[in-house]
Image (tube, rainbow, N blue to C red; front, side, top):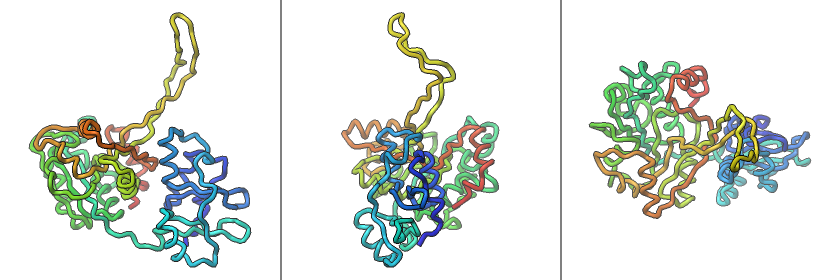
Length: 351
């Protein structure tokens, strides 16, 4: 029974951002909404957060807008394994344990009682780019091999995948491919099997996948190899299958503030003035799940980027879903991003 409950607890005054922080800190995909006496008022799961973000809620929204006020609970006398075995068929994977006064005294989770199986889902890592924006660092080192501490970015990604149960990994290589292959080899020393997709010329973020046509029989994950993230990709795959989509795109909220007052004008008349407004958009996180059918739309040996592939799928009338990623995520595309990753290396090197 999970006992580090304080990490999971938030008050009804908490924002979505504070709730996400609690979910991440507790590492159990749930936050517990409690009163001053630690009595349970509701729960917020990882899925509740993602559905709230898809509804358009911002990170400043209140936790009460997404919390489940009637969660399944257990008592201290209940058998934990029986509790989870009854809950899982209802898609419940965490059950708070309450004392006689309604206060939270424990948490039963599937991950604590049921060992995670190795997944057969393949993963494709795109590692063929030149990393021009990181020159001169990438003049003689491919971007995925730049180090955070003593560990290359690509190795960090693979170790995180291995920890989540992924074993079948494809890596597309082009620029300085020998340096990647010399380090990763066949992947066995990292606990995975690695197969290389060689590009004779740059083929874009999707082009190398044409080599996999007819070779994959189940949905697979595609990920840029310059990303550091703590998202559990098994959740992405489950979301994809449940959504009945042919493709699922990982998305993140991006916001920026205009440093001026924005004036809305109708003709010559000022309608309104917004002082330094914040604009929010959902942007691609560089992580995808695709059905094998998608490979039929990738021309083998020709350039194809991921937005073009997804547009082709939509043009065929197929569903492309969005999976909000609220976990820590960093695209290492610029020197500032690399400096940020290196200054917080303990966070990223936690497998």
